[in-house]
Image 1 (tube, rainbow, N blue to C red):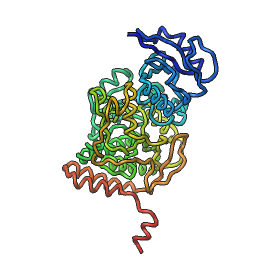
Image 2 (image 1 turned 180 degrees about the horizontal axis):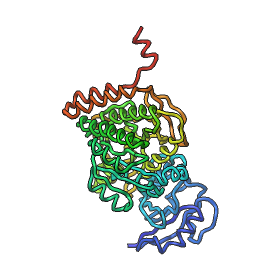
Image 3 (image 1 turned 45 degrees about the vertical axis):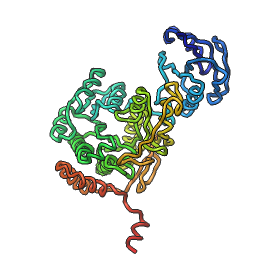
Length: 460
């Protein structure tokens, strides 16, 4: 079977694709012409010329595959292109690094992040001893790849999953694997003393909202007890700490978000204590990470549907795994040079996206139409979930961050001694499996501070 294909892009990118076609063209693919965006001449027959990407129309084209010689300059333009191609029953492929690949969901999400300061990142992490907890996980392993490229003097990947640790260390042969559980305080102290990191990225956590809602004691033992063990071990070896946090920590509605919020408050107090840094970095939903919505949709699609969405109105902030790793490194490198203490750095991720629209995009990526070929059903919000997330809490003050694309969220300071007492009580309750008491204490500890007006009203 022969597939007719048309290439779209600038004249320069189309000509580059045409000249290298033998390296990437699939067997049975016939290149019929080109849609050129902007001025310039090409060797391929001209199927159409358009002034900009959003002027593309599929109605006049007869092909099965549309090949992007270069990506559109925004995710919104990619989504628009996908909608038009899917309506004409065209599949979209992209040329990347001299290879042809299908357009993927991560090509369609979010706006472009602010320019990542690659030079500052490389300078910050070169020749440093770095340790990543959760180093075998989806974000931790991508962080490891990025940091390995910066030339650290020593890279330690700590994880409780033997399989995940094996996979990433089989790829990064110079990285040191450490099989250990962050819940084990003695193990953290022992391994940090051996590895002597200068910078610690704490990515290990329980992140699934419904599971942590069902097992809040387990969430506390990992997300609070584990964080405290890592922070104390980092302090013992005089290391800076970067905590990977989540937008679900903002005015939390579930136990997972509340556990991460308490972790943010703890790191803010540690950061104010000094001299070493303890910086929480807040991200949205990481698309493609373990348990995220993308692999669930893709599995449901492979089974013929339907795709399940909790609520037609639900929205989330999304960031891809590569974007998350870049943003974390960008935030860490910028924060080390920032004199301000005790802020949560939030990644500016643009507008929140509709989950149901994301489900439709997954269907369109397969060359099918939502509602016609594959249906979408609504299952209702799960415990601990809410319709919409926020980036800044109700009791936080928003300030300009230390670099482009970063927002500094400043909340009323909490005392370190008070937080230690709260965390100790929570961990003791969690060890007893007292889930109801754990949940109540967790929400009490992370309730937003009342505003001045609320305090005055209460006193009146």
